[in-house]
Length: 623
Image (tube, rainbow, N blue to C red):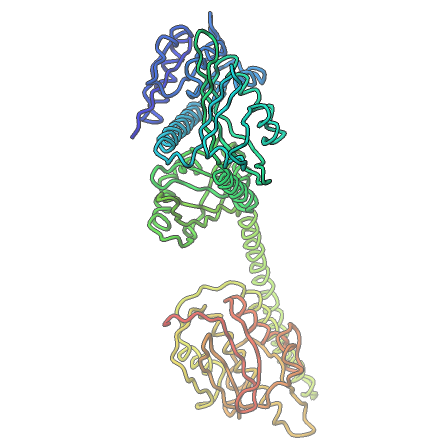
């Protein structure tokens, strides 16, 4: 752990003490030294200080004046203006004078946390750049001189000297006569010429060394980037010579441009993502990157989010539980995306409002460091739709219960009243009774249709449930053959309705096809969802049924007359029936049960020429 030494300059001792306490408590790397004026701060400022935090409105020497003096000796040292009397004008001037950052004071802990984050980030960047510069200098000194051209210019005589490498960079022969002014005009890019001329003039007139990068066009037309350095040498106030180096840095510039383009491409992709994205350092738990969707979701700026501990995204009382959830699903993962938990996860926006989110996350490794990459999707609208659908289902269930109860009472009254009627017209009475039975059947179908929208899946054996459904519908012994012992994941009640409807549909269609001429034909069509008694379907059904397994489901087949291909798309429609006994709901209920499970259902011809209903996309519990 690298210590961060901070010099805090503020003329209010109490505020300075509070700031120091917050910083040291937020990050144990901080050691804060306090000065109560600009001059006092200059006395305490040493190369050991990693960052300066200064107030603006101070007596004697204000923060900007203090900044100017600091920059004379420490031009790159991180300097944050932390002031209570801020304005855009002050901020602009501070940044112009070389301040690293600008932040207004606040009374809430979050402001001190933000200050700590910015100070830490500034120091890390400063150290990285300083280390990179040191390594570059060491690298340059250790490289073979063939990679670097050296030159010397004598302003008194106007003579210049190039090493061979300089001639090669410019692409000229060794008989080329070097001259700063003519070479600048000939080789350097028009947009860079003034920069180079000003640097040369500063070296010759004021003894200012320079280190600049510029574009050139070599004699053969090749465009290059070069880095040139100069060190003027003066005696008695007069420039005697200027010595320097020049290096072809085209490859480096191309790499930098490629990196910049990749970074921009990555940023564009990240900001174009519809979901909020958070990239978190697993070791520290700090957010290292985010996107525009995240700032919109939380109504917080990117600067506020980057550097924040990931637990601060969530309600305080849930932070630890959510962290454990991340570790459980993602922390030890190998890059595979995981959806976090089944329970609702919340984030908190800038106003404190809780927002339900669905999180998909995975672990990624970059340059040996591991990160959690989380995609947060706002599911507020989805949750509201689910609640509204539940309210609608509850209201529908209540309505169905009330209506079915009242209608049954009316039908019972009507049925009893028919028994009291004395008449010789028995055919009319039987027709009335059949009408009452059909109304009860239709009402039962409507109730079941309304209640097949939800499932409670669990392991269900196909063989025992199909056999029980056959008994419930009054099929004769031996009518049903089950050729599978598979166990599937299904709602048992819904699957029972599916079997019963398919069995009854097969029996009634087979019976209709066998009626003699002159009787009322009963063509195949959807019937009802109720478990038929022996009187309804008959023990001697005259049809054989088979329940068997498919690779991804099961089927119910019969050896009846089948369903014409032209009618197969229509049989599942609500109200469709060619039978004078059908309600038009039976096979629609079969389809509703299948869809409630997420299954597909299709009808085709069986091996015996009858109908075959195939239910696919089924999950097997024993697979």
